[in-house]
Length: 542
Ligand code: NAD
Image (cartoon, rainbow, N blue to C red; front, side):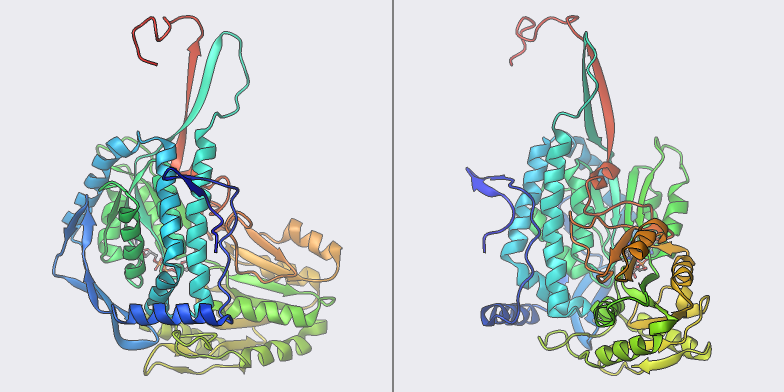
């Protein structure tokens, strides 16, 4: 298939208008066969060892970190080496050294790097997805969506860089030649989560380097392999050493080092509220020798709600709720974890939600028929199960699922708990697993009030056939991404710029037109016209 990106002429990629990477239709036999082959290929490469890469140098510490298949806990996906504090410091120094030259590379050259990476990802799409199928137990369509989004981020940010590098509009003043340029910030710590281990990691890294910064990339310990595969593609596409430094290790240990380092200029983080706040607090300190206030871009958790009004199309609403609640085992920051339903349609909605949930097929992620697989690790497995218990103890009624099996993998049934009250634990805290709380609202006013009664503000949706109600939601439902009569997951790059309010983060919008500004600063130069000799007169080659 011809990709949505640029067309090669003399080795350069000329960007065409941005279009989202199409998702793969696995009902087509040729696509199914291609994915099967990729899964087999990756299965033959499991258990290998990968180094840290600092300033282009491959380093092994001998202190290993293993990742396992969440659906098959005895299967080792890969072995990594834990960085020491000393190596974390070295990684920041290497990035600082590379920044001296990378910052001066033309924007077009940096954009070309991302275009080439996108092209490489497109060519190895299923293989990348197959790594995520093994490493984080994504089902085929979820893994395919993650890879497509990573391609989109590279394509989109490369184009965005070209836009920012072009002449910026300023009010004209006679007698002066004025110019506004966007320049990079410096060294960034890029700290992604495991749940979109390719897309979010590639998006944050790509945005940071295309704007001229250099980074220390510290992937999640649950998903370093896919990050390493992306790092290899950057190298293959011609990235100079030190522009991205690949560093695995304990978030708590080496994460703090790169966050605290006086040469770190910014931190791009996506993950939990707790770690985001910790990073924000530490980054606010200014150690001796630090010349700037660190910038923190922190995308954090959610407690996303779907409101179903009394006039909604109930079948559509039930489908949207179930898809949003259980896609990738509910482990999306955008996942619907609260269904807030008008009392007049509460009972039929519960029936419809429970019936659709019962049709979900839980199983191995390598099997194309599976629609939900295991949760990420043992810690999550235990935490999610205890939330189910808490939900029951607080008076919730389990109407679907409720069971779990941690024998072979970390499997939890898609679980729907009805009669949850506003303010209950599972109505307030982010569970990050396949558990949906259903709450009864007296009316639409009450539903909006319950939906907004949270510290988070990431995504939300409303199902209603009444335009007035939808308009009220536009005005009153305080979330960064509001969806009307559709599910609350599945944001597309460029189409639905993504990011939330309040404790969901710093209000940045990934995949949107302002995103790259977070990685740059604007420099204005103002020259008095006629005060210099012309370049040619001065003997400077033009
Ligand atoms: P997490 O906070 O546990 O970890 C995120 C990253 O931080 C990992 O790379 C981890 O190793 C690292 N880390 C841990 N301790 C650190 C420290 N002291 N210093 C520096 N780094 C440290 O989150 P997770 O479990 O990987 O991801 C799930 C969370 O991410 C959920 O809360 C989810 O809502 C959120 N999330 C948000 C968005 C969004 O766009 N808002 C997107 C995806 C995920």
